[in-house]
Length: 170
Ligand SMILES: Cc1cc2nc3c(=O)[nH]c(=O)nc-3n(C[C@H](O)[C@H](O)[C@H](O)COP(=O)(O)O)c2cc1C
Image (cartoon, rainbow, N blue to C red; front, side, top):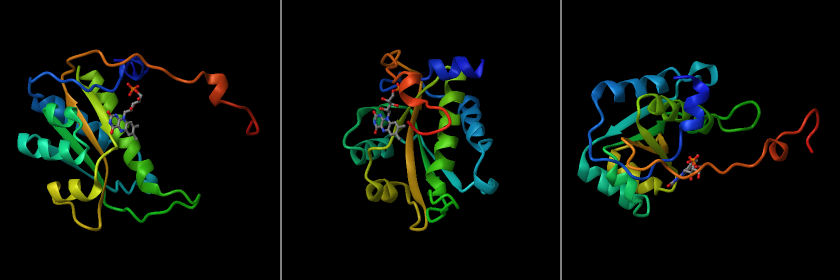
């Protein structure tokens, strides 16, 4: 699949079929994260793959009851191992590194015929406890993964004119 096609096709999927995700497809999605770039190639990440139904229900509770977290056959917690890293540009490095890895996974999932939804609305403390995340690490995102049971919502985006300017900020 062309990158452009995957970018256009990717939508947040909040309804999933019961069908399990085949091991090879899951591996291809995780491989896309592994290949993502990161500052100084530090790869400051761990990906916790959650398939256990009870854990997914607990994670759903920790996400304000978001049903897709329990319904998706797989939830991947994207965890940074370097939550204190600050880049020279005064921007924390870890959300950038982890966002790129998660986005790689969302696009690879499309290529595998799978859907994803980035979950940012979750309790760090609760999710940390459920997954046994050590204190020196932080969960940046939960990513639901599975076969879509609906096509997702239409994409609504600002126009290029609204978001792009040239040479100076306008
Ligand atoms: C950082 C981030 C956090 C998000 N958190 C949630 C969330 O907790 N629950 C949810 O249903 N969608 C969440 N989303 C999905 C966005 O709502 C979605 O990407 C946006 O509405 C655009 O829709 P699209 O992904 O279908 O293009 C999140 C997306 C991002 C990038």
